[in-house]
Length: 360
Image 1: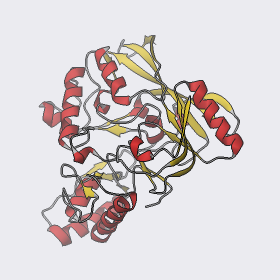
Image 2 (image 1 turned 45 degrees about the vertical axis):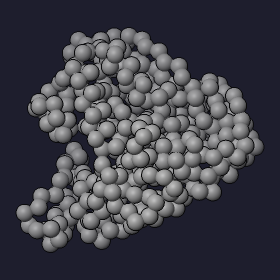
Image 3 (image 1 turned 135 degrees about the vertical axis):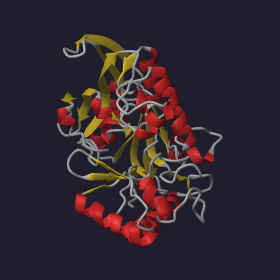
C-alpha cells in the first residue's frame, strides 16, 4: 500500500478532470483496501473510493481527504451446478473490485461463458458495476450478479450481500448515493455456452442482421458491441478526444404514460406531427425515453459547445474534455443542455456520473 500527498485526480479520471487529493492511497489487496478505509474513518477523514475513474466528475478544487484507489486484481471461476430448465452449466466468476471490467468481459467470452458479453467496452473496474447497475445494449450487470462482498463502514465488518439485498433498479442500487458500503468484490453467475444471451436491443439485432430474441456466438456479440461503442466514442482511445468523457452523461428518462403523451405533444408542436418520439415500455407501465434523441432534437447536436468542453462529435450523450477544460466548464455545458431539453420537452435530465465536490 502506497500513499501520495497532493496527487492530481485528473490523472485518474477518464475525463482528465479533478483537482488534487489531500492523500491518495493505492490498495492492491482487499485487506489493504479495508485497512485504508478503516484508517480514514478512525481519523475522521473524508473518503473517496476510486476505481477506473470512468464515472466520476470531480471538483477543480480536488478532494479534501483520503482517496483510496482500488488496485485489487484476483479472479477465479467455479462450476455451480446446472440450470434445471436449460441444462446449461452454471459458473460463478469471482472478481475483486479492482479488476478492469472489459478485461473481465473478454475473459468470459474466451472461456465460453454467457451473460455479460453485451457489456463489452465499458470502461472502469468491477467494483463500480453493481453501484451503478451498469448496463448497455439491453443488458444490465444486475442480471448476472449473484452476490457482492462489501466492507460495512457502519459496523466495521465485511459481509456478503445477495442480489436482492443490492436493491438494483435502472442505473441504481443501495450502494449509489450512500457511503456505508465499500464494494470489495463481485460474484457473477454465468452460463457455459458459446451463444450470447437473447438479443434485446434493436440496434444490436439490426447490426447483426438477426431478429430480437435470437442468440449469436459470444465473440460475434462482443465484436459487434465494441464496434458500435467505438463509433460513438465510447471506447477509450488516447488518440481520440471524443473518448475523453465519463461515458453517457445523462440517464435515459423514465416517464409515466401521461408524461409521455405530454412529451409527444411538445414534439409535435416543435418538430411536426409526423415526428415519432422514441420510447420503450419499461415493464412497469412507464416509458423509457432516449436522452440522446431529446438532446439532439433540442438543438444540442454532435460537437456542440462554444467553450473548451464539448458534446462528443460521435454521440450527443457524451460530454467531453478535448483538452484544456475544467470541471466548471463541463458542468456549465451540462446545465445548458439540461435546461434546453427541459424547456423544449418538459423533461429534466439526470446526470449518470457521480459528482464529487460539485452538483449539477
